[in-house]
Structure formats: structure tokens, C-alpha cells
Length: 325
Image 1 (cartoon, rainbow, N blue to C red):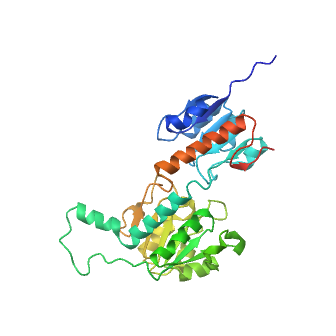
Image 2 (tube, rainbow, N blue to C red):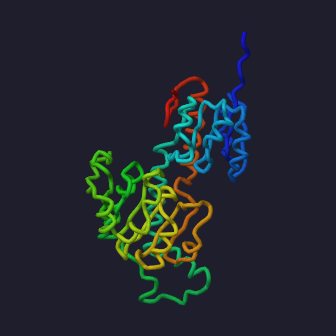
Image 3 (cartoon, rainbow, N blue to C red):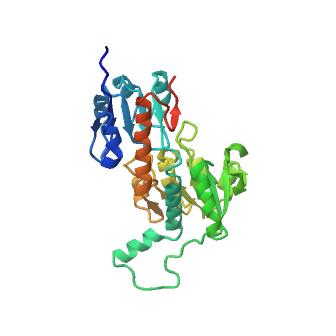
């Protein structure tokens, strides 16, 4: 009788013990019990002999990592996007890749509106003015911002998060429009939001909000050419992936006053941020907080654990990106 192989899993970041408890009951768990990421070399070394991997969006799972983890059966990323994983290479090895869709939609939509309000009403600037002692009292023309009512919100990307952002627009008196390849890309037809070409959306929108996965087609979608198309009074919001925006081009556009400001939760070279973006008062910056609520992050981690446990038990993943071949 062949002895049963003890399953093992690598978890690349600190998680609540209650979330990981079910995994500990079925696997030997190698937990990187820190908030900082493993280096790529460390990741590869710790993947040796592992059957499951629970990783984050900034853990690079490439050919080298997959070769090191030659016993892997399941990769569960605690994210929606899978641009950090070589999905094709994983599929070729029979590895099931999973993500955590739906769960972070509401939290990311909320942060999108928080950034939009912060940059248009100059909340960050006002906070700094009060804290550094520079405020000298109320003045008629002090820190005048831009009102939302009557403005057009251009949403680039008509998936779940883009639609959740659009659904809030009427509350502020804004008109939402989408840039999408076809009307079929807009799942919720009840929103009845017009679908424009990207060029038309950029030309006519007062706020452009990005909700796209990072792919070869979307990398640097927002660049010098597209920024020039925007209104000089317009604001750019990005809560999707940093690489969708060319940060150097954005800094240039802001310096040339081609757009009015930006709200950014993600950056091209995280955690590094372009120096000129840091120094600009008309840019609101947050450290990749899109899904950062206790409720959402816990639910995402729980789903990732469940996905790994299901696959290692020989059952179907709950939310597979690539099914086992």
C-alpha cells in the first residue's frame, strides 16, 4: 500500500489565524508571517515541494517559480487580476489558478469615489494646510474645488467595479459613460449608460476613472497621447493597476497643466512612486487600498484558502481562472 503524501502549502503573507485554520487542518503550512513580500528568490526556494500556493498580486509567479514548485496543483491569488502569474505556463503544467472576483467590488468602488472627492474638493490639500498651521481662517476664495453635479464621469472598463462606480454617479448628479469595445461588455443594461469610444470619452469627460486589468493591450493605455485628449479641467482616477498609466507621462501632463489633477491608488513601480507625483498638491495618493477593508480582505483570504483546499482534495476550484488540463 502506497503511503499517503502529506500535502503542503505556501502562504506568502500574514493572514488572520482563523482564516488559515482550515488549511492547517489538512496541510503542512509554510507561512511567511510578515507584511512585506518575499523576494523572488525566496519565493522560488520556498515553493520547492509545495502542492498549494496562496499568493498576493505582487508575488511574481513566472516560469522560474513554477519550475521550482514542480509539485504545485493549485495557485490561489488573493486578488482579481492575475497579471503576476504566468497563467498559460501554469495551465500547461496542469496547475489550477484561482482568483477572488466579486468580493472586492464594493470596497474598490468606495475608494474610487473617495479619491474622486478628495482630489476634486482638495481634501488632502486642506488637511495639510490645517495640520501645518498655515490656515489663517475662512476666505471667500480659499481652496476652491470642482463641483461634481452636472459633470460627466467617464469609466474605462465596464466590469463589475466599473459598473459599481457608475451606479453611484447619480447620487452626486454625475452622468456616467463607458468606454467599451461592444455593448455586450456592459453586463448590467439597467444602468443605461452610453458607450463611447475611448477617444470620445477622453474628449468629453470631466473625470476619467480606470477599471481595467493589466494586459499587453492595456499597459500604458493612459500615455502622453491619450492625456493630451483629455479636458484641461478633467481629473484622472486610477484604482485598477499601476501599469495602465504611464506615470512619467502623467507627471508631464500635470506639469503642463493638460489636466486638473489625479487620484491614484496604484503605481507603475510599486511601492516606488514617481517623484513628481509625490510633490504635486493636485494629486491625491493612497497606498493600494482598493480592497483594504477588514470585511473584504478577510473574505478574499477565506476564498483563496477554500480554493486551494478544494483543488488539493481533488474537487473543482470555486473561482478558477484556468481549469486543470
